[in-house]
Image (cartoon, rainbow, N blue to C red; front, side, top):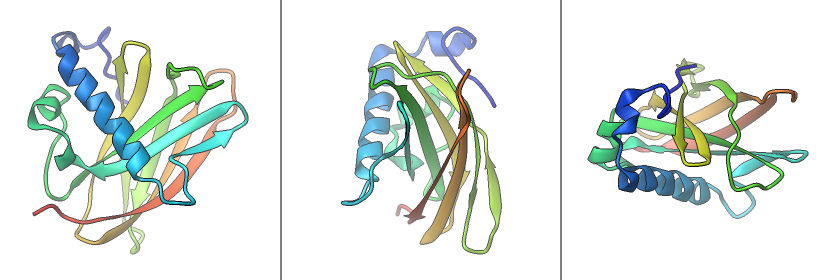
Length: 161
């Protein structure tokens, strides 16, 4: 897992507060927008909630994408994972890994990197897709001193024009 945090990445130290808030807001909005009427944007495992979302990378502003070294494009997406324990407002650090596959069983390994903003911690990973691509995400989330959890969800992606 690639980890980027303000403590280990000097470039992250110069990231403006407004850009960090914009990325966090975008991640939360897409988390909520990705849920249907019967879907929740998270999976619950006892006192642990694993929030997940996946969206087109073009939804991120060019400035924020540049600061986090995120490739934007009509056929590029991002998956966002965050872990909340005991409904506390701050996120938990985790070991996050996973794959995404299409209906032809073509797989991409997700390379997650950590983003820290104040007490918030979340994990992003880029992936590629084709137009009208029905993708299945399989993510494993490990938290210290707790059993690992598996989250699987599906989304269909469309190229931006």
